[in-house]
Image (cartoon, rainbow, N blue to C red; front, side, top):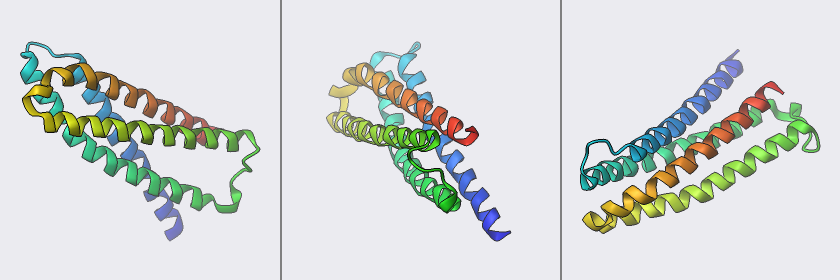
Length: 154
């Protein structure tokens, strides 16, 4: 019974971490695409401030996703299908997508750090650069979620 409870908690934490990473990226993408009535400089400041906070949350969320993902796989143990099966190939595809997301996210984080360090001079490039990065993050996370749903039901 304790093993089942722990397994459910790990799965719940996995889903919550994905909600944090995907929801945050979606919010940033939305803000980036909708400057509204703000002056470009104030919109850039808002966007860059949100991006700085999100990057910390993103890497926390990714750490939780990796740990709980390994925990989920460990819970299945020897019951996991072989890599040569359709399910195993889908899992491999999901893991490859996660790796690509991580590589892309390192680049995104470096760009946010550099824009932040540049101060006021970076506000115009921020409005041009960050929508593409957060849109890409949303699309990558959405694809990973889709693969996770297929794995869970297939």
